Image 1 (cartoon, rainbow, N blue to C red):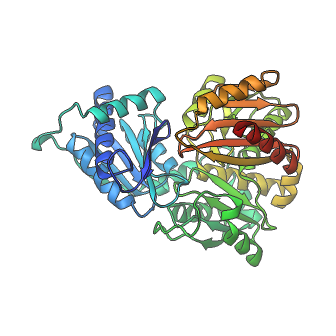
Image 2: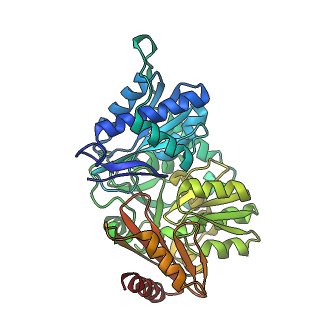
Image 3: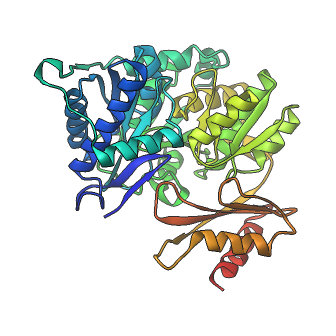
Length: 457
């Protein structure tokens, strides 16, 4: 059993002992603490809650709703939803904050509480620590009977989210309709199976092949949208002669495209392609995290903007985007953050912009992909063990490569002339991630193996 408390929320496997997994006790105490802090800071008792479709979702949802009522909060329950939908709903509702019940790309035995402020953005590290401390201490009172909160179910936000996407300045529904795309969708049997087909219909896409789109939470494959997990989508694209495949993770904030030849466009290139289109229409700066491809930097410079890097984690990217007034940003895991919509990763926004771009280009996805800057990435990991001192390890590697350009704002990133390697402790799993990139796949893998050998020596 695992319980991870980090900038990405309170995440854990269902069951086990309190403090060792995400048990009902852990759900209740951290939900109550977060709700109490929101109410005390804002004087506002309204809190929005939504969830993905994983099998533990209904159980966790009941716990969260009841807990929020028990501290006097009034809850807007969106039911089956997406992370970006809840992010949009919080300010529209004038709520004090929100909670999204999802473990994102983690397998089905996981769930999590992802916490939002009154802007519908993830709370800061400092605020997260306040929640954890209050949750562990339980130093507060619950409401008496006359003060318990109410729950209002609101299923209108699917349409509200879609309407907000259609209203974006650079989304061209007519161009998409004229392109007459045929699209296959793999939503890993979560809420993307509701939201993505509904968006495609609203965008004028008349032919949609749905696989794994039943929101029952029974993930048919590992829910992280990586090449090795998307063989069914590849087959569907080829067998149906689709122009494009779309894959999302369970909470629909990560977006991956598949080209007409059944090959992945590349999760790193979702943001690159969207940025390419936005920057053609609006000059400005971009931001991605340190583990993301150099291709975004190249595209940004091509269009006359400046590129900036942030620590891994959506809240860090958003903070940097606001600092440099970025017009587009996100993360290389398929997360697109478009401030004209809201400051959160949003697969619906990414789909609409990408389809507009592809429609106006009038090219096959594979042809366009070949025109983008070419980089190749290798993603590796080392499972953490008690005897592995990550701080000592990173210090050792920093000393060894002190002569190379490097950054320590998030773990250690070493920038070589033609490659880079980024080592950091994961926020969501008990592992060290080792990402590398180079001009060829062989170069990316070679530099990763070299660094990994240095680590274990």
